Amino acid sequence: MEIPNPEFQTSFELSIPKFIRKPSYGLIVYHLVIEMKFLYTSDLHGEIHLFQELLSFAISSPSEIMVIGGDLLPSFPPTKRYEDMVPNQKTFIDQFLSPFFRRMLETTSIQQIFLIAGNWDLGYPYLITKATERIIDLNQRSYRFKNGYELIGYPFVPPTPFRPKDYEKMDDRESPWPPQKNPSYIRSSDATDRLIPVDPFPYFRERETIEEDLDRLPKPLHPKRAIYVMHSPPFATRLDLIQGGKSAGSRSIKTFIERNQPLLTLHGHIHEAPELSGTYMDWIGETLSINPGQWIGTTRDISRLHAVTFEMERVEQTLTHNCFQR
Image 1 (cartoon, rainbow, N blue to C red):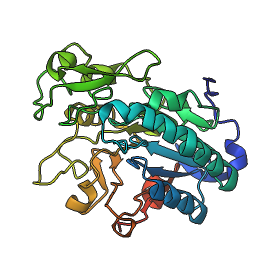
Image 2 (cartoon, rainbow, N blue to C red):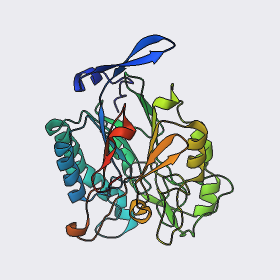
Image 3 (cartoon, rainbow, N blue to C red):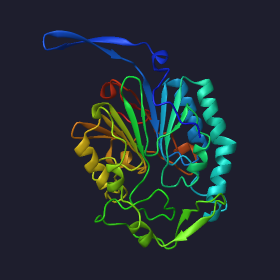
Image 4 (cartoon, helix red, strand yellow):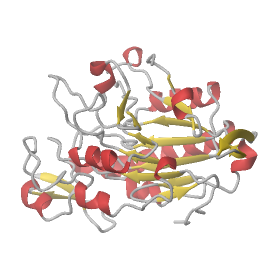
């Protein structure tokens, strides 16, 4: 894997820089603004028509940066057998996703694509073997642009009722879990693509928690210029509602946002939350948090891409969703 350059070398080429006058203690300070537009989506789950809509959206709403917040790959193989999940995801990467990313970079204004895994993405490590300076893995990593803004990624979610467990961890040592299936599965560490059956209860207790992980994430130079990409939404917000009105987000992520107050956090995981809450955004203190949602139906007629766009330097003023009004 090629290690991406920590600075965005072409940022001045992507858009026209502007200078804004800002008064400061009787002086006029000129602040450089680079109008870099982001396109964010999540939870495409290998649905080819959603990827095709994403390409069309990137053409109709030109952006420089694309971020996909996890669960890119097909959840279930055609055989419906868990042991076929990773080989099916690798086939999807080779036959569709890698060519799709090349086409996106060659035919649209998108200059870089940033990715994290989601809880169904057991084949994600294979995808990242194909990473370049323009397709960048953000899993527990940071990427700093020349204007000082940073992207920081975190893929793990609290325990779900589903069997794949590679990207699940206990939220903290005390939070409750939903019912678990035994056996659950993790991907083997060798090249065989085997799934290893595990009892989720001892498996989770032997791992670090999300709370512990968040303390070890890369620290941004300027929190007010930090954008976190986290697959799980924060708990008890408009972004984590599931059917029945319960919350399924992360308590530790919410506490992390409350304590650190970054500029922006981008989430996914809970597809239906915007439909249930009526909004795709929420405020946690001075931090704007977003979950665009995703609606994956059984036919193309009832399934439509959910995505947002915004400008890095003016997030609140420029934020738009392709399906929801603000």
